Amino acid sequence: MTRLSIEPTDGPVGAFVSGIDLAETPDPAAAATLRTALGDHGVLFFREQSLTPEAHIAFAESLAPIVINRFFTPVAGYPNIAEVRKEADQKNNIGGAWHADHSYDQIPAMGSILVAKELPPMGGDTLFAGMYAAHDSLPDDIRERIAGLRALHSSRHVFGAGAAHLNDPDNDQGDRYGNAHAATQDVWHPVVIRHPLSGRKSLYVNPDFAVRIDGLPEAESDALLALLFEHARRPEHIYRFEWEPGSIALWDNRATWHLALNDYHGHRRLMHRITLAGVALESGESN
Ligand code: OGA
Ligand code: MN
Image 1 (cartoon, rainbow, N blue to C red):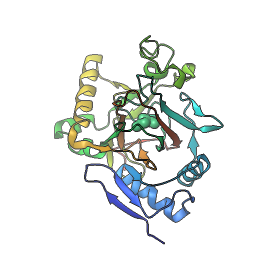
Image 2 (image 1 turned 120 degrees about the vertical axis):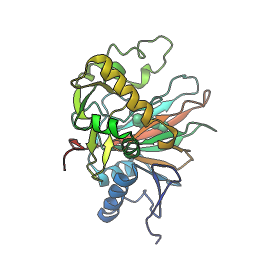
Image 3 (image 1 turned 180 degrees about the vertical axis):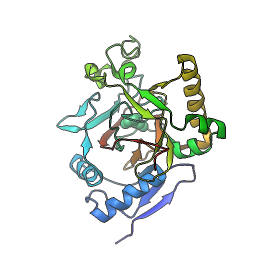
């Protein structure tokens, strides 16, 4: 039997996991090792896997309960697997701007398991940005300024009835989203959280969903968010993952952002995503 091995990428975030066949549900010891590694590295990559939807579900449930994304169209017959799909004739993709999934939820999802089903002949990589590094590399005065602040996260402008991009006649994403009426639960989270698995401080605002910093006039809030976003997406915080048939990415939304590159027009890309339940988030100031 090969041994589970976890090798950090050559970038600032992520690790490659080998010595495990995810078609067989990880036992509790392996699942615990993977959870700890996820907290440490932010995203885990697996190669040369072959997962049926049933095995995907069993793998997910070995790590955490599944949460169903209420805006994504599910895979036919599998209500707890979201379809992340772009057809050859579609222009827009899902997740094409920097974000952390589900930060607009009261108890945000821990992470997701994304399984490659059909890949374009080239392109379609996913970028991951490390939020431990983004936090720790902030200038001292900014780190001090944001410690203890809260930010409002919202899904209204992304998934809600009035979302500009969904009402844009040039945007062809319509069949992939639904439930706009559910995009109403805005929530305050600490700008810097204490990561529930690693105990490290992590920057927890993202460009898609964080809209306002508590207690600041709007212009100041906008400027501070813009500064944090600009800093976090600097190249030194980013790892670019190239998908291959059989690749799987398991990411932690509390330690990373991600962005799906949309550079494969004319080709289909199909992924299956299961989202894992998380816990309430505590401020980085807490012990
Ligand atoms: C997602 C997402 C990235 C990708 O599934 O949440 O953002 O590369 N996907 O498809
Ligand atoms: Mn996403």
